[in-house]
Image 1: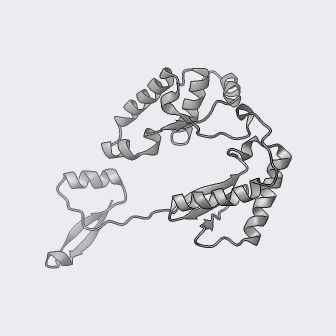
Image 2: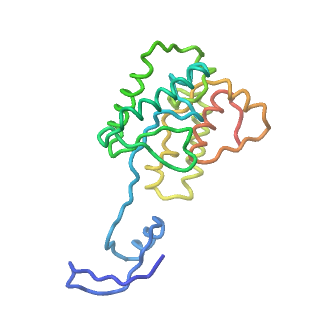
Image 3: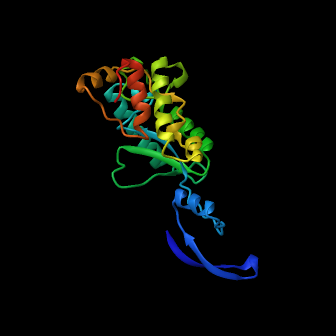
Length: 224
């Protein structure tokens, strides 16, 4: 926390000290101590929608042969170069180490998804056919409802939420995506491979929780 000088023009220009923080728990504690909110600033990152990620392919591209995947990638790059992306369609995400990714960003996720569908349908409607079964696809999709998973998997997630809720505030429990998962990844042969790696597995919280639940749903192997 940082102590600062505050002048409130809406309260007869009263001048006093205050606290500046971007930590929610510190804010919550100060409010409980009788402090009053003076100003709120939010920095919101635009919505993102992945067009194609070679490191984690999504359906239906994930079910294509290696040759077809490379062909689709080149077609997509050519399409984006020829049909310059406009601000209405979204903007291309740039960054260090993002060579295997092509993603759009913008202020409205629903519009990005429509644009993605239009772009990919233009490229995929060129005689390309799916060749791999879903269980052998080259990427994972969150296509299974958690409520349809085995009861032991649902119980495991409920146990995780209960233990995690002891150390966070109620607001975070209700809004954190990791604590409100609805979909997990589909059945895939990779879960059997993970099963044989070692007795104990470590899944990092956030992106790792859906993976852990998907692995458990397939193998029912207890995650410690």
